[in-house]
Length: 250
Image 1 (cartoon, rainbow, N blue to C red):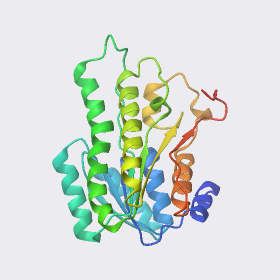
Image 2 (image 1 turned 180 degrees about the vertical axis):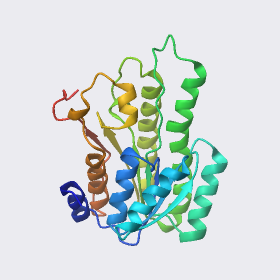
Image 3 (image 1 turned 90 degrees about the vertical axis):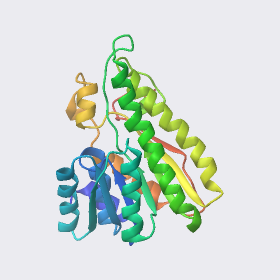
Image 4 (image 1 turned 60 degrees about the horizontal axis):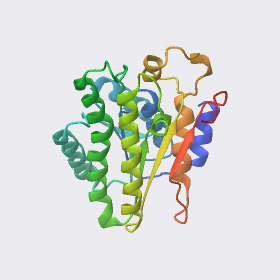
C-alpha cells in the first residue's frame, strides 16, 4: 500500500456502506473503487467492459475488501435500471454513488460530428442524470446518502477542441447544483469533484501536449472523494476543484 492509499484509509471510514462507482474499470474510477474497498464498503463496480471491472473487483478482494462487478452502459436507461435493480436485490440500499463514467471525443466546434457530440452528452450528462435519479429514489426513503459527481475543470473553463466534453461537464455541474438543493431536505449530500490534468487515457488523448510526468495521479482524486465522505453530518462541500500544482489557478 503506497502512502496515498494509507492516507485515504485513515481519512475515509465507510465500513459496511454500499457504494456504486461508475466508470470503475480504470483510471480515476478504479482508484476510487479501491479506496472504498479499503475503507470497508461493499463496492459495486460498473462499466461497459466486464473484464476491466472484474479485474478491479479481484484487486479489491485480494486486499481483503468486498466488490461486485456489474457491466452497464450508463447512457442506456434500461441498463441503469438493471444496475440499480441488482443493487436493490443484493444489498437493499445504496449509501454512496460516485458518478465517474465519462468519455471524450474531441474536435473544433466547426468540425466535430453531431453524432460524436451527442454520444459525449449521452454518457457524461445523461448517464449522470440516470444514475442520480435512481440513487435518489433509493436514498430518499432512508433520508441519507452521498452522491459525488466527477466533473472536470472544463466544467467551469473552456478549452479548444473540447466543445462536446466541456458542454457535457458544464451540464454535470448544473445538474449537481440543482440536485444538491433538492436533496438537502432529504438528508442527502451532493457534491462535485472537478479534476484538472490527471494521468489517464482520456487526458492523454485530449491534451497530448502535456508532460504526463507532471500530471496528477488518479489516487489524488480518490483522496478528494475520501475527504468528502469523511465529513460530519453537520457539513457539506459543494465542489472541489483540483489542479496540477504547476498549472495556473484559472
